[in-house]
Length: 356
Image (tube, rainbow, N blue to C red; front, side, top):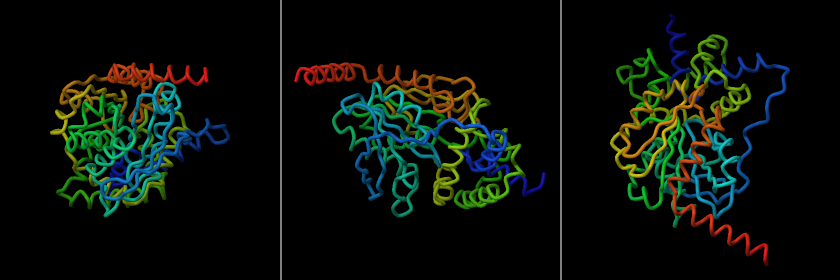
């Protein structure tokens, strides 16, 4: 295999959230040209919340849906994506919960990272800042996908006192506590290891390769189609949407952000998650394979594993009915008495309005 082709394949595999997204997009568009695609999943929650200013001044964009008095679910997305990755969750779960979605720094509508800090620990502090803003006096369930799940672990490392009084439970989807892309890199892992330079240098190499693949997708179309983050039945419009997010991600996400994900290790933070945890992984997840989820469950004090059949790394979008059911049951159990109390409050409030 030529060094050029090896490099291109590595770029596709390494950026588990679609470094070579355009290749996948082109393949699917060609197959389905002329057919009506399903409606966009890009619709955002209706309630625009005041941006949250984080510890270093970075403004974090926040949207919400559901009754403001309902129990809170806080969602954090994965690498190179934005809050629209949770579309299938908020449109369903907002019937029972206050669903709050955030864009990570330098992602989506949030501001670029102040002073260039795109570390997972900075993102963990961002999650804590949003939690302080939207739920200062009541517990919440915090739900993270991939990089967002690692940000939750970083929050546990830095703010362990939040877990219990303020964080009643965590759900980690497509997650790992270290070496996030080990499953996706596979047999060409050494291409990105420090013996070929620093992780930052490797990340810049991946970004350059990503741009080359985007410019000439035909060379790796077959490989990318097989080795993508999706399960075997992912619909084309879903792939197109996630690909589009990755294509539009800011350059620093692919350089500074990717370098951080290559070297972060938060295994020591797992014992600090002293609340119930739900670990969800797709059966065909090649970025964070089921084996990584098993390891994660083993390191958490109180965790349960769910494997979603026929799903890949984007289980919450590929199999929303199954994932939403698990999230709903888990959140109700973790919130317990607080949920029941607030349900009674909403009923009293509704009755008072009808009688008024």
